[in-house]
Image (cartoon, rainbow, N blue to C red; front, side):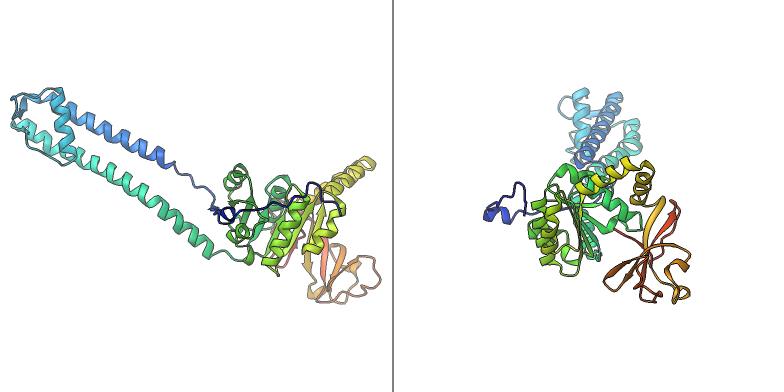
Length: 363
């Protein structure tokens, strides 16, 4: 067994209680600080405009202190008027000044209050709306997909799965990097910043209710720990894991992974195939990229195909899934197709190709 850089990290009690908030995909809204700053600037503009309106007609106002209204008095009057304080020391006495108060100052006062009250309510309710959105999202979360690690492998894996019809709302990304989670939420996925080897992080991702878990960490030892934790939490989920070293694949299978992909050797075999036959390499790359060109799909046997041979079907069948066995197309034990069989076929797919519910792409 080879686990490069395997370390056992002692966690303190404080670390075990660190919360890992769920980050839902961002909406096109401004930051609260920007909103508050914009509202304050608008309120200040209304205040200045009101002060200059009063000063332009300062002869129509009376100040109880000295009988005249200067620019400072105009700003003072605008402030106490817009805030509805109204000390009464400066009052409009002319008809023009009173008409201005009715048709100009009063609407500005209402606008001023709307700006301040609206800003206060928006800031106070922002957290409440986000909590409500999170609770609604969590209540509707069932049979979802958890992706541990959103690097090149994890991103490509989830893009392939989403190409078959999986909604982005049904995907949760877990990664220790906050920048990676920000990129995931920008793509429309929910994200959690944290170490997936810890059960509390997987609990935040609702891994116990997940249908499938994709593990694409950068280190093999981390993949083993995540697989152990996830399998202990969810016995029925389908767990697919990637490792760098081929000799660590059996360890992940023992840890509970249903499928283990050796990324380094798979890439190496594709490189070697491309050297021997560039055309064959292009075909394999086309098969890997879902949604266009050639795709590998798994589908059930239809009634019209029951009793036929593999070569008598209209599709290009490469394997037959019978029970828990995967049989090659030329395996003599297949005999005639049965209604309970599933066929692994190669089809011609385009971006507009519709995948029926009983037809699914292989992982």
